[in-house]
Amino acid sequence: MTIITICLLVSIGQIYLAKGIVAIAMAKEGKGYDNHHPRMQQSKLTGWGARANGAHQNGFEAFSIFSVAILFNLLLEVNFYWLEILAMSFVALRFLYIYLYIADLPKARSTIWTLAFLCTMVMYLLPILP
Image 1 (cartoon, rainbow, N blue to C red):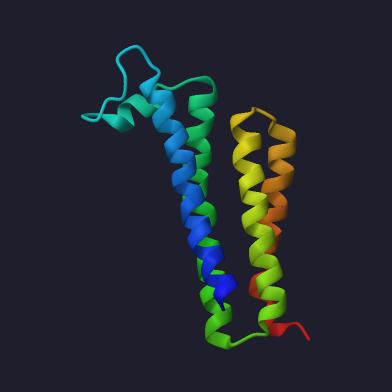
Image 2 (cartoon, rainbow, N blue to C red):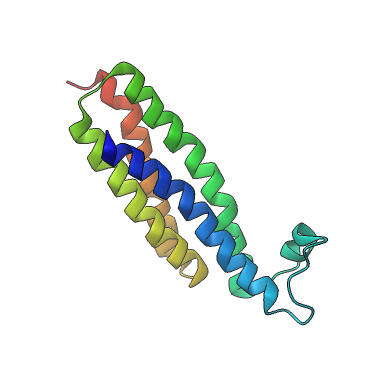
């Protein structure tokens, strides 16, 4: 279960990795980071800063279904072998996804997003697979 816990923690960290990149983009703007109205400033970002913000927001979406899939499998006490492989694959793919999003490689990004999503969906099927 240690690998599963680490994957959950790393997945949370990925959300805030992207947020850190957003903060860098905000700080590089003319007036610097606006801590009074950060969401307003984020909405005005362009280029790589806007894409980092998109990666940050998508991280919350991906984490919600990933974490529930993990908990679902833990509750049903499935064999951890495949769960660990899928969880590690998901985490690795999400690192690549963040990079591809910020680097503005949309086709590759969408492919990686799909693969990470499929990892999560297969987790939901693990309890019924032989």
